[in-house]
Image (cartoon, rainbow, N blue to C red; front, side, top):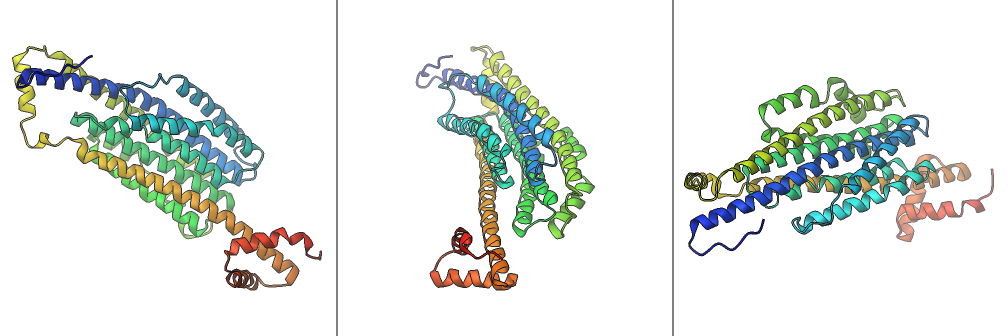
Length: 398
């Protein structure tokens, strides 16, 4: 549809121009709604593969070997379908949307190599999780871009509720993966516990935003099936307060969290359907009125007369969406930092073990020795530890 410039001073011409703009926006939402369905399906499979991969890695390949391979195969098939279904870059989409889609496609392209390295045992659980998180984060970031210029209050509200919900579901998935690391290994470090708490707090904020915008029926469904159950809360307390017995709670934790995520997935599909129905109804309403229909013009003027309608709805809701996106990105960066910290700790622990074995030091003495060398040479302790391990071949055998 081509929009011509309205003649100056012609109210009805401006009315027609506004309607044409609304039709274009709502048609775009229907396209985004279709993509949101594909995105949510692909994200769900990525979340499943991430969890299975974590358990497989942390158990040394003893658990979830078949589940990991099957989930990877399903994700690869869904990725191929998602990529094949994308149209040529249309001019109607914003530059920001196209940029985010490019990032998402790039992240998906990295996963086949990750899977190969993972199968060869070259990837730690935290690194694998970080790679899956990156792909999921870029895919989810596509959803709020659709609301950038929307003027339909109901559609913007539905889109914001959907995005808040999808963010919350992803944080539940990250909680499942982090818990799998700790329960499989039989311990939660202080950093891992903090990461777990951050995910729990983050999902609660996202779901609170979703519940504030959702209809009563959807709210009731969420409270019935989407909340963490009592047993999950008990396992959370174990993870955050004391050492679990190695491996005993892994499968139960994963089962409970998977059951919750699957229930959230059903609700997510319902939200996408509701959003598309809202957009379709709004589009039909816009198209229904005849261009010269005076009552339609009068109703349109009346609907825009109140002070409440004077402010575009996305001015109030988009900051919330963007804040949630920033929080998820921050948590992902924190996870990458945690991965680096854990790897450095392993190097330091190996150097301490070397001093204990060859110098007869206690663990505390070995730590103090590494610390003193680092201070004397003005270098980081991990650098001293790496240098010591490099020269370990020159140390005399016991």
